[in-house]
Image (tube, rainbow, N blue to C red; front, side, top):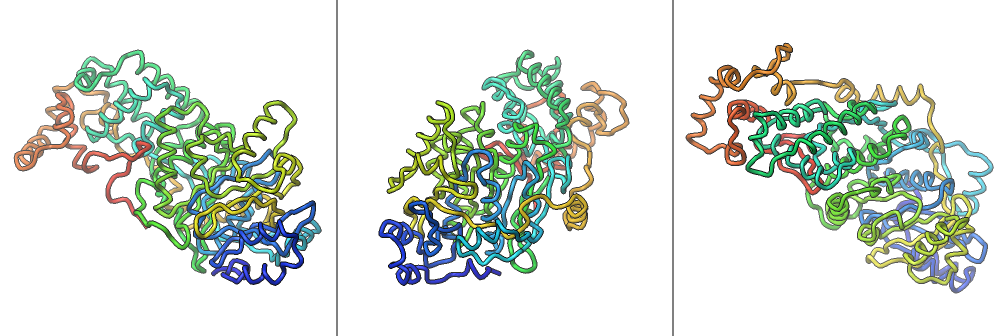
Length: 543
């Protein structure tokens, strides 16, 4: 249920009644945040060196699917801002996704602890602070670290995101896309990395080279680069991230029995030394949601708010195709009820086409110790609407837990720029104990569903054993494979007389004709892919 401070009220009337106590410029700013509908409370206005608690700075709940940016130098309070926003979203029945890189956000499930600093902050901003824990689920990539394992199949992850992780160039990325196309059309499931390696190896063999001739071919040099990149990737311990059971992103959309939104915390502190990997996995989660969620149009409140921490890592060395996919996803996912907040140090970390779509901004302090710092500061100031503040001075003098804010009003127009002293989170500002975290994970209803990895028959087994078995009998020649699968081929040909095979229309394989049909009956029709090249088979559970 909504808490007492996020319920709709009559803030415009309150501002009017207290107008005499506010300077004229401060009153003008405060009036821009006097919303009539449900809103999240960020804090109180800072003006002329003073905190004015009668001028509350808020963000309309309905505008949180218009995306946002939380930025600022290290140590300025970005993590606590995420926690503050996540708490209030949960209280309003909105699920939240948080990437917890340092382990600081696991405390959101536990009531906070009052001390002199918390009490002082609450007094400054007129916050009725109450220690409160919020419903949370804890996840871990591939089960590395504490949390319910989050895995993706290689097929589901897709060639665009995998190319980003493997740091492939444009030509290599296109070749990888061709490999995926072949596997998709042949019904060869790429569950884990050994499946992909098996397909690449086959396509560079004497028999396999014929398979891609009509659609461009795969050079041995490019295949060698991809295979070496996969080997290095696995040597870094990445194998565990790919496999089954594949995580269903519908789990992120749940609410608790009390109606509060569940906060999904992806614990990344165990893999924080692999930023290229985890940042791309965050994009996979978002791309998967985009692929499967229905259009909703304008909504009273978001279906999910997704925080992408360390957002600059997404854009480092990104290909043009990757950047275009991010831009389109952010532009279009709003209508599916999902809000995306990018969390980074400065707005310049985010490409202009993406930044232009981020309607809600919380900018913490920036430093100006070097010429590069000064350039970043100047660029940041230019991204804000005109205001009566000297923003360069304000941004370099903000304290921890203070920020410059502008959001979208209920009519979709930018609010006045407001220097703000932010509220204190009501949950624990720090990690929960390891025993409590382990207990929460093991008691989750999702634990049994995802805890144990499953290595079922997929492309690797089918390419190394013509019978589709696991006995390690070695690869079969093309004649043996035809003999073993002949009954299946005969039945498939009988069906083909009634309806032409979609697979045969794409690639008319010789050695894999029978194999393709037998596998295709198990996994369904040819895979369709989204903007990011991510994929889902039909029949996936969706909420």
